[in-house]
Image 1 (cartoon, helix red, strand yellow):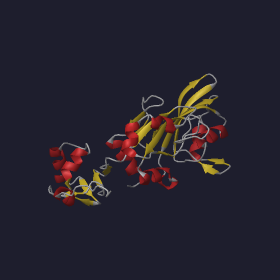
Image 2: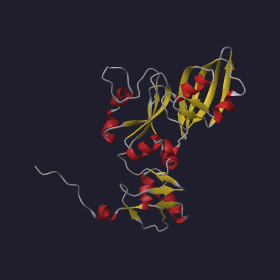
Image 3: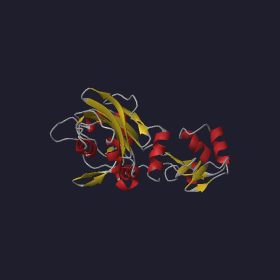
Image 4: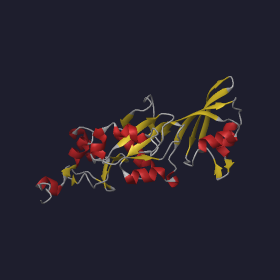
Length: 259
C-alpha cells in the first residue's frame, strides 16, 4: 500500500501570509500583526519585513518580533516541570525509581503532540525545582552548553548564620577540585537560629556545583530549589506539575542562546 501524501494546494506552495502566522502563534490579532509589520518590528530570516503580502513557510522560517524569536511550529513542545525531591531527572529508570518520565507518561496528549521529549540538563535526586523539557533539539543543546552561560537561580536552606563576606567570596570565585567557580549574584533571603536561606545565580552546570560551593564556604545545604532558568521562573507552580511555556518565555530562551 502506498503511503498517503499531503494534499498540495496553492496556499501550501506559496506559504502563509505573515500576519496570519503571527496571529496563529498568539502574538497579536491579525490587524495588530499588520501594524507590527508596518512598523518594522518583524523580521523573517534576519531581514525586516514591511510588506503585508509576504508569505512564509511556518515550518522553516525564523521570525522575530522586537528581537524575540516567535515559535511557529505546532509540533514543538516546551514545558516547565517543578521536580519534587527524591525524583530522578531521567525519562526512565531500570531500577524502577521515580523519575521525570513517569510524570510525562501521564500526559498522553503531550506525547501525541511531541513524540519524544527530553529534559534540558539535570537536577540531582535531592534537588527540587525548575526543569525544562522539550523536543526542540537545537534549543536544548544550546541551553545545556556552557559557552552560552544561561543563568540559573537557586534558593538554598543552609546550616549556620551566613557571614557578611560569604557573598563576596562566592562572587570572586571558589577553587573546587575540578576548577574555579564563581556566582553571578548572591543574597541572604532569611536568617533563623542555626540556619539561613540564601539565593544565588550561577552560569555553571557542573555536577552538584551549588552544593559543593556552599559546603566549601562552610554552609552545607539542607534543601535546594532551582527557581529560574534565564527568564523562565518557577513561581507558584506545584511540585510534580507540568505547564507549557508561553510565547514570551520561549522567546526569552531563544534570545539567551542567540537563536
